[in-house]
Length: 157
Length: 366
Image (tube, rainbow over all chains, first blue to last red):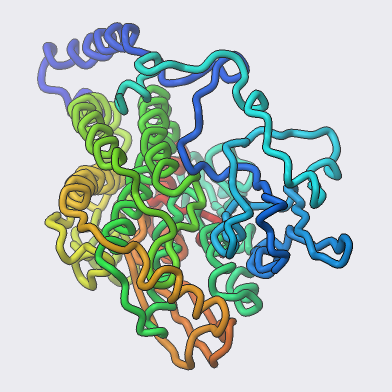
């Protein structure tokens, strides 16, 4: 059905054209909803499921994490008679079941969500590499978006 | 003279989906959906998975709306176990399901408006969806693929300030409703593209087994949240939205109405959420599932996803792995409607009609 049949009279027809323009102008003065990522960032929520680390002092070498992993991305390495988990982040889906199942809570998830590499092999983290806490500067790139700067945070504030 | 043309899977608006259309002039005479382009055999793979590691894979049915997929699986496992779930976990599940539903409906609004050539509502919907993904991130730790529910409860408790954040986000979206109404749903341009296009009558909808907003858009007010309540829906006060017209626009209105109802549910859930445990006995039920599996038996459970009723037939012969898991997904049933719905419609209406059904090809093929 054509548009003209849906509009009652000339007045409404003109309003269908003018109203969006007015709304567009109003939206010009609203805060933007996007962030310019490499220059700005916002902090992920607490408890964000990012890169997994392993506290080597707490780990009891039970390997329950490898058993529950849906992607089979956790393998074991035997060092001095003890089993240690190693994670291939190229396969990991960040479901966090390994962290959930860990009896001494030695596996933890950090806020690190950006660790790109040039080689696929570099995503494989060996047992001692998992023990290092990630450098926050890897995801805190540029300046932090403050409250009320983007509309998103304004809603929450 | 008619011409047979493939619509998809490389069509910009089709998704991972192919439809063989026979075209006469610019009219679609016949349309046959070809199902299976993204078939991954998940149901077979589930037979080789433990019950809990299966959850991330089940969520891959539908990434935009993954909480109900998880919910359905958990309902099945809990039914076989006879597990008790604390009230707080029920409420948290309800909150996540509604967040997921709103995000999914906004995403569909974005796709539909792009299909009819309006890019502003696309930006609005995607921008507003972001707030709900952020809420999901605060609740579960990730924006998509939550893997949040476990047999016997949920994985994480809600932080104290999250309730306020949910309320504020809902407030903000409710303020946006008049804008959406004026410039999308009541706009003559949008109505002209959606009214009397892709009409599915009530009888056809029932005969073809339509699901979700497609069924309710044809005047059948059937919602599993009302019909067979699960989680905390029994205690929630909400309406089932349905429109009798059965055209593309009615289906979009149903989704919009459902979003408004979801706001109501979110408000009630946040307000009434009881204190207490979030898991039956800390980690115990899920530990039983993890170590000993579930007892022998078979069950059929249903729950309401954003796209319609999702059913699960689960059969266990004991042990840690299911013997058979069969999902009945709404997108699959809605894909059956495609041959009926075009009915000599112009080719230009095909993308809009297709997106008004909200078929998610990955969920359809499984």
